[in-house]
Length: 280
Ligand code: NDP
Image 1 (tube, helix red, strand yellow):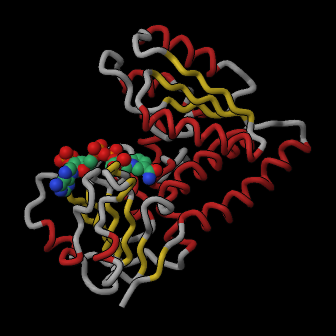
Image 2 (image 1 turned 180 degrees about the vertical axis):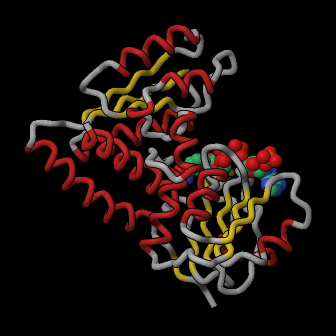
């Protein structure tokens, strides 16, 4: 039996409708939320993501500034720009597109962003606050995953959530958010033994690895909810980490790629930017 599709585009549209209302309300008070996106170098995927973020800002009436810096930009120059944006009252959110060129210390850059403008939620203070359950900017992709589950009526309490991938931007924060919602959480990674045995225990399987179609039908138990965060470019276009055609036969609900988690990531970035403006 084929599972139900979790339509990221549709859920994103609904959430963006709510965000639009909040933007309009702020504007009535004379406040326009502002997002600055900083891109260093010319990675094609990063360029595409930055373009989509800019477009979404414009659609929602959020002030957008994009800084496209040369690959050779020095760390000092980048830190200088961030400091300037930290002090700019028009800017409520600052996002530095990752990955950065190798000569730049990513941690240093992220920790230079004012935590109150850190709409990506990667500053050490926001990461720490998230883990201990204090108010924090929640990283956009993990946040989007949780909102998708909630909007699809998937209860997390008491469920076994298996997260494949332990990156700071997806795996770890999504596991933290699931734990906060009272799920029992297992995190798997490249050194995990018997991965199929573990993924087959999942009620909810969240995959963020970056390997095309690595999760096959045999690795998923009947009735599992499957969230595919992966985006992989293959000859035929974009595919996720989950073998969609096979796994949809056993999953209760499943996200497609594209049109799944991707649209939610940008939506939650807009949410965080508006939230930052509302807090001012
Ligand atoms: P990273 O490369 O930072 O992390 C990948 C994780 O997968 C690591 O923890 C790694 O383990 C684990 N891993 C690698 N190989 C295996 C394996 N064979 N079995 C089990 N685990 C494995 O990736 P990201 O978290 O940044 O991104 C993951 C994917 O999500 C990518 O495809 C990326 O493009 C996509 N993505 C999509 C977004 C969206 O908006 N939809 C946003 C962000 C990312 P270890 O730690 O041991 O190395």
